[in-house]
Length: 101
Image 1 (tube, one colour):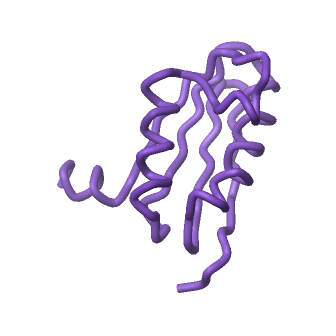
Image 2: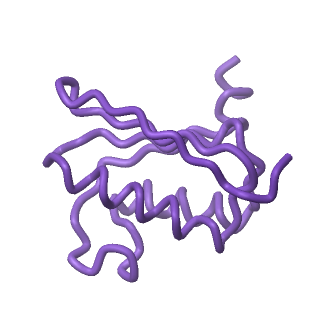
């Protein structure tokens, strides 16, 4: 698996949904890039449902914990979003897929 993170963004503006799919290795360091993409997507439309799918990525535990905190708080880190806009964010991981099976 590659050390770089690759992000694919799929948008359904009519349904007010965005899915960001991550591949490669997601670390606390590369998480910054994912947060920037999430902030830009969230700025497109108020109330947008934003799903971050990391089920196909190798995710470091610290990065997964940071994503889960964002999902619970409905905020991106202040360094990324100083205005602390509401974010309707959910995280899908390989552990979730296994639990759903």
